[in-house]
Image (cartoon, rainbow over all chains, first blue to last red):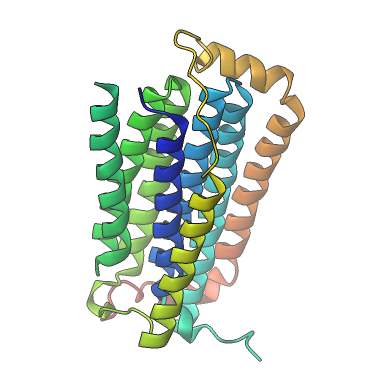
Length: 100
Length: 177
């Protein structure tokens, strides 16, 4: 029988992989994929808690996370395309217009 | 049996996640991310949430990954890609921060005793989740649909501006090396 802790450890590992990707890569698209990985880690934790409590609220929350993630990906990729039009690159170190 | 399945799928998901942040080519990353999403869908089935698993495959592995691949191909990044990790100190700092997050998360669940899982509940069925969505979470559900509408309008507005005079040079984006 797989306990709740196994799923939480897996979720924590996945979240850390995503965080490491955000912090170490410079390609904006790969940073975006790492953010998706972190969102999915949170989803896994929610479903696992919902299973073991047991309560359907966790799965409803996952539904909303998915809706927000879809909107976020669409807007974020549009921003990346706009940046690429101006800078010819998706390297986030070259996006420094708002840096002081 | 369940433990073996969990270990196989879990290791696959972790390995695919590592490959997402380690490979050079964004297309390879996107394909590994798809593998990770399918693995997570299998984990949702193990957790007794078939509705969420189906949504995961449709929304994440279907829609979102197609969007990613489409943008990667539209931008034609491959010839510009080098191994572009950040410089040494920032990379080390990033890894230390990520490891710190892992330590905090593991410490937080240290004293957690796993309750026994009830077996045959149909909690994850589409009917049960749908009833919860349309009764208890009706307002957030409607707000989510408004959010998606705003996202659609925002994306169109963001990418449509200045398109008439950019049209001649916009065609050069994919032909440029």
